[in-house]
Every structure is written in C-alpha cells, then in structure tokens.
Length: 160
Image 1 (cartoon, rainbow, N blue to C red):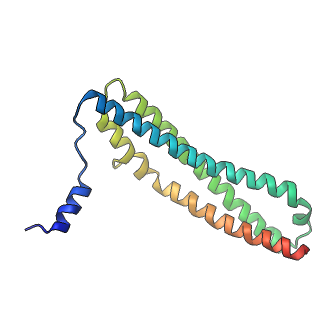
Image 2: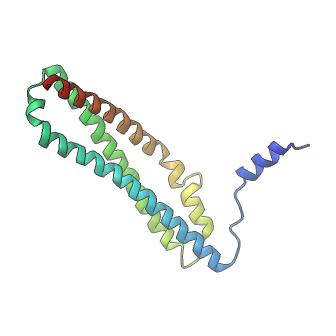
C-alpha cells in the first residue's frame, strides 16, 4: 500500500504526457527555446563579468601588481588561471546551449515535443550531459573571485 509521500514522489518523478493540441505543443517548444535563451544570457553575463574583471585589474592595478613579491605574483597567476578556466568552461556550456536551441527550433515544423524534452532533460540532454562542466565553471569562478577579493583587499590595505 502506497503512502501519501510515495504518491507525491511518484507524481513528481513521472514526466507528464506531451500529447495535446498542436498549439500547446508549439507553445511548449517556444517556452523551451525562451528558457534556453535566458540560460544563455545568464552564462554570458558570467563570461562578461570575468573579462571585465581582468580589464579592470590590469588597467587599475598594473603598477601595484608589478611591485608585489614573487610569491604574491604566483598567487595572482593561479587566481587568473582559475578565472580564465572558469570563463572557458562557461563559454563551452554557452555553446552547448546555443546548439540545443538550434535543435529545438528544428523541432517546430514537426512539433516534436518529446525530442525537445529529451534534448533538455533526457539522459543525454544538455542538462545531464553538461551539468559537470557548468558546476565546475561555477566552482572555479567562486574560488577565483574569492582569491581575487582577498588580493584586492591586500593591495588596498598595503598601500594605505
């Protein structure tokens, strides 16, 4: 005998049917394309923020960076490598999102909602296949910016 909790779990874990009217299928595909585009904008924001950080750092702190000891320069180098790697992984994820959005668009003439769902959330979909890349990019960005902020505080207090 199933408990109420088992029923709720089954309801949540079971994918709903994709059958329905053609206009509903079209709307589903359009919403999925919009979802991917929103995700792409968020990832591009991360990439832009990392690049902007480099430009700001080089333009504002270049003399202070040159005056640092070798140990601090090495730490700055590893912070930079961490952020560049994060940027690379974010761009790779952004590229995967772009490719899947093109595949979604190709599903519109046939209204193949099942393919759209599999491309997004299926076993080989963009979310499952590239989740590690996205999480790694975010972890590297968090580590890099933590180190970056510590270095900025150090530079600020050392000069004042």
